Amino acid sequence: MLVAALSLLLAAAGASAAPFERRGLAQIKSNCNHDLSYSFVQHHNEILDYFDGVGGKASFFVNGMNWGCIYDQDNVDAIRRSYEEGHLIASHTWSHAALDTLTHAQIDYEIQRLDEALVKIIGVKPKFLRPPYGSINEDAASYIQNTYGKTIVLWSDDSGDSTGGSAQQSYDLYNGFAHESPRRPHMALSHETQEVAIQAIRMGTVSQLANAGINLQTVAQCTDDQNPYIHVGGYQQRDSSWVCTGAWNPTPPGNPTSTTSANPPTGTCASTYYSAAGETCTTIEQKFGLPTGSIKQYNSFVTCTDIWAGTPLCIPPGGNPPSSSTTSTTSTTSSAPPTGTCAFTYNSLAGETCTTIEQKFGLPTGAIKQYNSFVTCTDIWAGTPLCIPPGGNPPSSTTSSAPPAPTCVSTYKSVAGDTCASIGTKYGLTGNQILAANTFLNCNDIWANTNVCIPPGGSSTTCTQTISSLAGDTCDTIGSRYGVSGTQIKTWNDFLNCADIWTNTPVCVRH
Image (cartoon, rainbow, N blue to C red; front, side, top):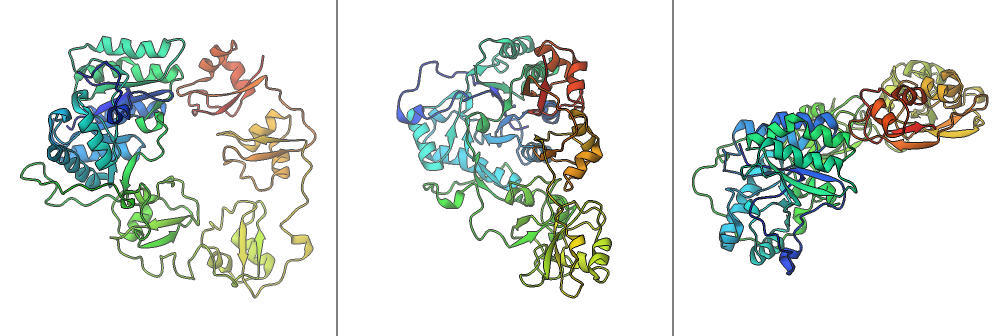
């Protein structure tokens, strides 16, 4: 497998302990601004499962040809899964060469060949680079920064797994992070190629850190870098160039340009597509004949399994335009009807369907769907703005979709898992009372941070404080921190699934 350094805050063997003072070296990052960065390589899927289990992220500093060829299918699959799940993919050079011993031309080879491989595999050129062995000098650091725009990182703590350390020693290091006081940020180094590293994780390092409330972050996150990649594009298809053998010549380097922006440059989209209800990245890729992962690469803001209807998406070059019956760029299927085709806009009421709205306005069957292709006719959210086409009967004042504003005694901000019933319980009200005051709500699918009107008639639950849950929290762990029982936490927050509490969920605590 390729070599990776797992970043929780980790380091490489042989790094100088002396402070870097000159310009190039002074810009090297060896610690986080906050929390913890964890970096790895070989038992890859198992490692990902551990991090996924606690909602943590790791940094994988990979080689191209070291413990195997990066183009081997298992390695391609591992890198793609890591990238798709939000872990950081970063450079550890092509062949794990000591950069302080190389000429500029040799550095070009080490950086460019790995960059080319990662562009092919996941469509990105990494910004972050960790020097093998921690070996870097002023000349190499300045050349890499100025020529390639890379951010060089080392570590603050070394697990010692690559220099003869035991699994117990690695476990003790991370155990110390979990119990230190006062707590400080860390950027730690472990090696996926070392058996003791995975043994330490199996002993519970990741879960223990998460349970201690430590945020497991990528190097980019812990250094507050919003653009972890110099270039972002789509996945490429395997061809005869996906090999690690044979001659390979770097191109003469130049200064980074705007064409390597982390946001796709203007003109890289073949078209803009407005998503339909229920679509995912996968279904859109299939519709346009695009490779897996390409929609996410060109639309980094999107959550692939929860795309809002009518979301404008960049469709990259290389696919097949959909037929007119499926394209969103034609007037008959666009989720944004052309200006002037609507007689007026109507805001739907709770429980309405396309059929009931068509009957209300004397429209032919299918008219609402035709002019509002984004809508799911049997599941229209209350308050959805709908285009009403010409030809029907204007609604009477009794069918207006703007009911009188309810009187609210307070406003509640919903949290993950809330329902009308659970919110009502907090305030001594029924779920129906909550819905009556908030007709736009889908009672069984309330988005977190929705402002909910609390009508008169109930009594408010008083929280001494509202805290944010930590990764791995349960009702019992929260209760133990605040001197109460897990049962009490559940009573005060009946929306919680005590065994599966999302990180950063607002939780009411009473004393």
